[in-house]
Length: 170
Ligand code: CO
Image 1 (cartoon, rainbow, N blue to C red):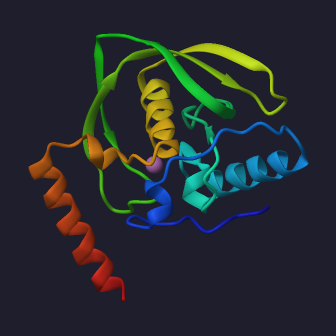
Image 2 (spheres, rainbow, N blue to C red; image 1 turned 180 degrees about the vertical axis):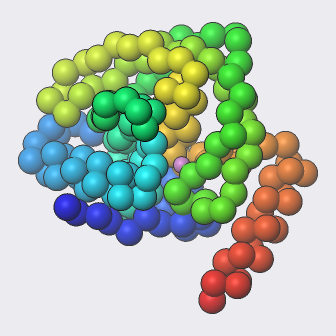
């Protein structure tokens, strides 16, 4: 097991745009293992490389329910090629913003392209929680967090709440 430290908002590494991956080598396999171990250890449904301090375009996700088999996806250089007008509302949280959950609405169905760990292009359709999770993790690769989807006033309230709780921790 290689569980890495998850970096927390407002660490500036979370706000950077990550770079495209072009080498599908052993280092990438190691990075994906770090992400997988760290995500499962934290009971998360998704984890993006910037959250362990690596600004590269890779994330992992597993939105299977507890009564289902594990269903892990390693997603590299993702793109959304199509999205539904219909939206899906979900109470999101983020391992980098502990203690905060907010309802966010995002396209319910998305068609995506990405590369797998072998560099093979995958084209898939995701809906509901899988769609929300994919979009949330892709946002991380663009330096965007789920709280950036909130209205400005709401975002301010959340930020104040975060500041208070991080001061308490010190
Ligand atoms: Co997140």
